[in-house]
Image (cartoon, rainbow, N blue to C red; front, top):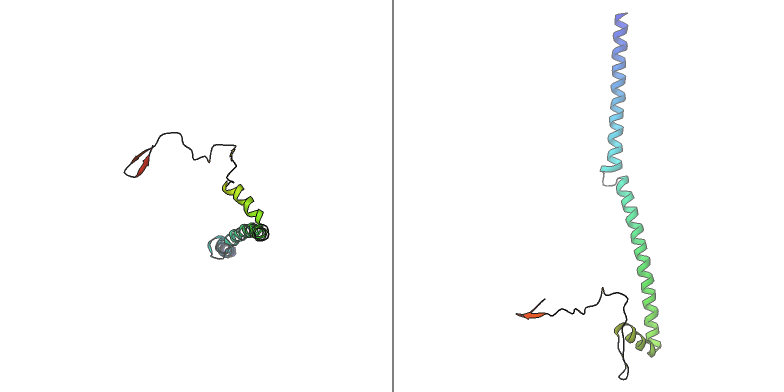
Length: 125
């Protein structure tokens, strides 16, 4: 009876160690494939997200390209379009006109009212 109990004991110990071996191998495999490898699932998901971001950026640039192409075609056909762009973007005017620029906020105004002194060709405040 004692002999059979010892056999059962050793059998259970071996079965437990086999299961432990499989468990360790399984966990190690999941870690390597899931997170540690260069081609892991984690890197795959990050790359997929980056592809989506780049696709959106490509679409934005394509829309801007189409808009610019239409503007170039308009400039080639219509000489008044050149005048319109010069007035809107570069604040150019005719000799008998005055232009007033109205801004909503003062963030991009370069007009500082504090006096500046020039020392050795460097501007200081």
